[in-house]
Length: 135
Image (cartoon, rainbow, N blue to C red; front, side, top):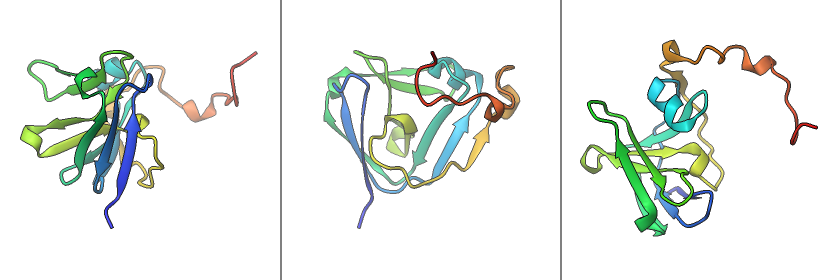
């Protein structure tokens, strides 16, 4: 039985299905991932065997490849949400973990490019955790 994950963008215009296993799950702290997420890191699942099927809104998917790098980002042209992209002539699938709507059983393998971490990205587990919006 093959594993299937469903996902979508924030506005719901784009939806997709990934069939197959993810081989790795990394949280990347490189300058490019920090810039394109606006956060401390990007959390992405990777596969060389899984297949991607766009269910709705494929025409809203835009892809940006940063010149002179291997950095690629796909996103919804309506809401800007990060979306999966196929790289290296179809041999490699990268899926933003936050775009998956179904349960992800795979745990992250590692934080990568930690030498590029943001200055403020230190000891974050010690920062207060609040269940909802602070008052």
